[in-house]
Image (tube, rainbow, N blue to C red; front, side, top):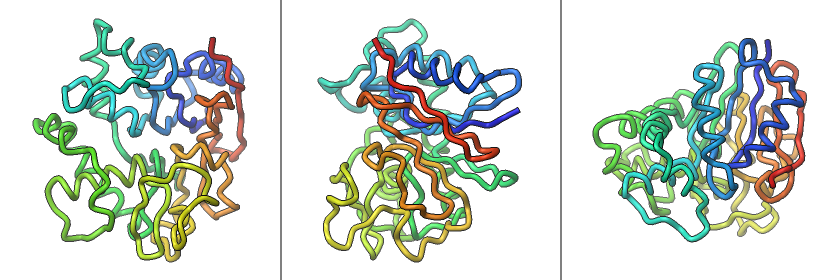
Length: 272
């Protein structure tokens, strides 16, 4: 019985299957933690989504920015982008069933017994784990409730840049969503830079990877995240931080981290 956290799959179904074969995944015994971005950019998003859906409770799935984008397109909150590869889902007879399931997935998963938390992009340095849980629940409640379409219409944008406990309404929900699904670089005073996507070496002055900002209030929780392929899973030996997006969609590898002993497994991209 083992638990494996797997990085961004992004429609790379065949590589995903190769990795599961490598770790000898047994759905009757093992559990997968999936770090979001199940879909988009790869050619087999529908296959990935259907496979994870049928795993039911054997998989913990958190939402990434590409998953939210699929929901926004499906529910008419934004337009289809030229480089999107989600047509197979949008045209599938079970599209609505899959999207209903997807919008009921969390932004943050925590297992107190294992002392691990899983999120797509990370946890803001100014949030302790309890605050992060509360913030995640705020967005999840809206996304799973009657206002989900209105939320998706207000989700996009880089403002506000700073966390403030007095934020309210769509601005508050947008900031929380950006932290959990888009954040990479944060300034020393807590400001998000959502424009830079490359290596931390390319960051503007006073901006650093979110997990390098001090103080970081959730430092005692072991945090697993994806989203940032340019890190190449290198977090500079930061304690309790585990990056698992190894850039499979860019022709690299898909990574699994076994939580029981922190051993990593990889499968090379084998997409047709």
